[in-house]
Image (tube, rainbow, N blue to C red):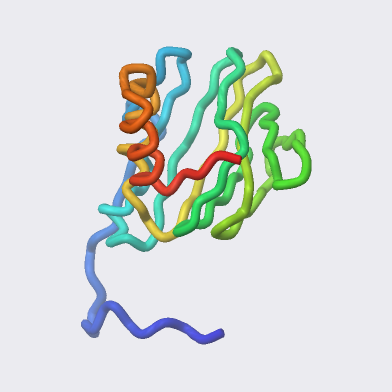
Length: 159
């Protein structure tokens, strides 16, 4: 493996870092209290990756096993216990644990601990996942055909 071709061709560097204080309000909050912070979106990273901080309350929540054809996902546990499906079994992960799921890998995650938990979700390339996560609460309002189209649009295949 080698480094990719340069994307920046200047010779002095640029002042273009992004800073997001921990005190920043979440970008999206689910009815169950799960708070989502879009630390980096595909749009902000020119499609290279996305990075979200996912803060779950004590109410059990999270997606069932599924896979993506076009992106990989990684989960880094910050606090609490998160159950992550690795394609074969559910693993109870703890702070400092990391799980990587390549394209096509069956996975899921849940907080079933009865306590708050949080993690970083990294995905690559930087697909527009915000529309997926913000659309989930509206699935009940969709027809069967609209739900199928929604999941196809967002590269989510349930197993």
